[in-house]
Length: 167
Image (tube, rainbow, N blue to C red):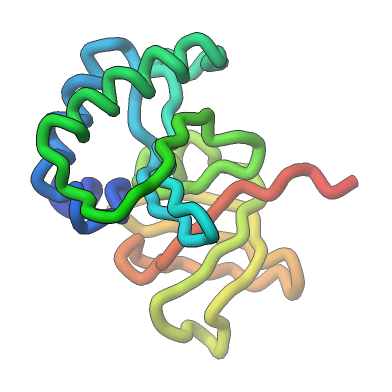
């Protein structure tokens, strides 16, 4: 099984927050939520984005996002690890949510995803496919384009996200 350290590094994609990741994760879990992903969006204003979902997977409300924003702000402000100014955004993962952890692949088995790899596999670095199966930290996909069956270790998947129904 993939180690907890690997999962934390995939979820917390902001190096400055590595030290705070366990505390942030625990504080949010206690409130009944789970962190899906944390990234820094570089634009004219930097935005630190926390994607959060309920532990029971029901819909998250704007009021809950605001409450979580206050909790996260208190933790971040106490340590002040990010030197530049940034905006904090707390939101749900949305329809095209990122697929990060092994359990995400299991949960969304049968769904269409866009996949990017860290290295080429059968001359593919990215593809759109159905999640067919998950076993022993390997994900099996069926490529939408040529119906090729692709089985990959989770470790070479750079990122993946659900594809909203295109019909």
